[in-house]
Length: 374
Image 1 (cartoon, one colour):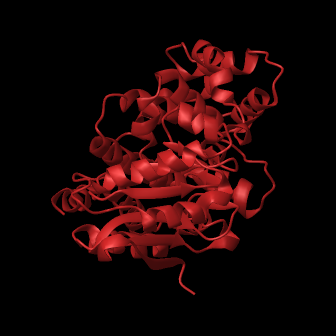
Image 2 (cartoon, one colour; image 1 turned 90 degrees about the vertical axis):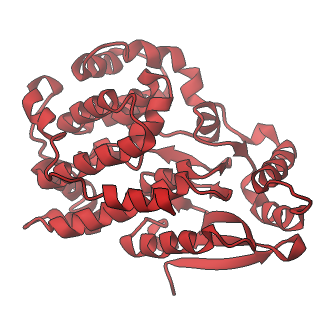
């Protein structure tokens, strides 16, 4: 069976909604290159189809919308002799698909229930209407494998207060539905058992009389949200600890920020988990993440994707990422042999080298140009 399923849902007036369903439930719908190469052409196909009023992006199963990218496959491509072509093709495909979603002219409704991490965050954040539920669990956990938050996190983390994005990137902290709404990573909250009700409401909505499709979707989701029990949504951890997050990130370098995070004593499981993740993550990656968010602070979405293409390529060329994936996902010993034992030991010159383009012309540029002209 295909890893992505496509369904056409009829609506009033002879129009239709196209459903794109990630269909790799056993892998928590982790995003593969094959899935990307099915999704992006479908989006291009229906972009100018007047019979299609909207797109729904969802997934099989209840555990996850998308748990991230298939980094095990990436590991095998970089483990011995770097397969540079595979790496570039993979990320060109993913970043251009995400860029397409961000710039799509029709409404895209993302049902972001369950686990939404890494590559799942990249897809969801580009959608025009992002729905979270009481089971939503978001994160950008890349520091645990010595990578960095990509898929446009250079852009959407920087749309938050500067310190919050840095905190989330360094600690890989999990976010619930209330966090997502508070931080602007989601638009509406519905209970997880309302998915079918949402689809039925979209199918029976009035799409005629010159109404804008985005307005129709917004009205439907707003009405359904008002019918969801607010008590089913857990409170926002980020909001609860907002002042502390701003306090510990109010420094001009990664080392001082890490020290402040680790030394801040708060009797709270969410905060302590953030401290534990940071203390066990890659010190090199922490420096790269800090530098990434500072350098990309004022970039446009397009510029951020191009910058990420450089940074991802360079990460794949260096040994730290291979070791991180090995320890967490291959051997699963959770004992990575990091290059640097602490943030103080990290060579800033080496960090800076991760931002040097390995080619004269960014290979992602041509694909983004095609999206802009579509």
